[in-house]
Length: 173
Ligand SMILES: CC(C)(COP(=O)(O)OP(=O)(O)OC[C@H]1O[C@@H](n2cnc3c(N)ncnc32)[C@H](O)[C@@H]1OP(=O)(O)O)[C@@H](O)C(=O)NCCC(=O)NCCS
Image (cartoon, rainbow, N blue to C red; front, side, top):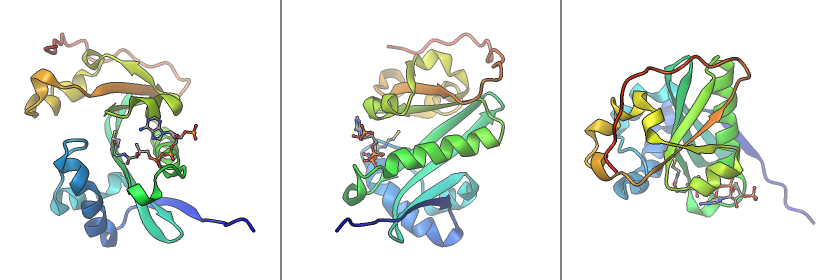
């Protein structure tokens, strides 16, 4: 007999915050994702989606909007016990759909799991093409000068994308 499992992706609620924090903390300690305390999660709660697998929170993702041309997919984590079951892919798809519905044309991520994102249709880009991120967030990071994360992006809309800020950007290799 086949086992049927229910996976649901939904907006995060205040009651999820402690759970989201516990889920993100070990990855943040390894510098894989952004460090966030519970207050920070509350303050950005409307940016978070959670995945429930058979009623248990299995993963989380967050979308931060920079402007009509750009959103960032952040804080993507699936609990190890629920990995390789399609939950990460569902979170990414739900995040993209949400951002598309908001009218934002492109989404990017900085990641160590490039292969995962390439499978979801993302392409690798240079960090220099993301000045909104580099000069607001990355510039404050201890690893700014020797960042080894890979930038990936996906165009979500067929509408023409206006050129991004033409700031001159140089990121040390
Ligand atoms: C990356 C992560 C979110 C993937 O979640 P997941 O639920 O295991 O992924 P899925 O089961 O939805 O995988 C979807 C596809 O990607 C593949 N995939 C999963 N992890 C992968 C990886 N690290 N590298 C390459 N491909 C990967 C799967 O094999 C699957 O392929 P298929 O469609 O051909 O079967 C999860 O491993 C995780 O939380 N990692 C630690 C935190 C992290 O690195 N987050 C990313 C921050 S940007």
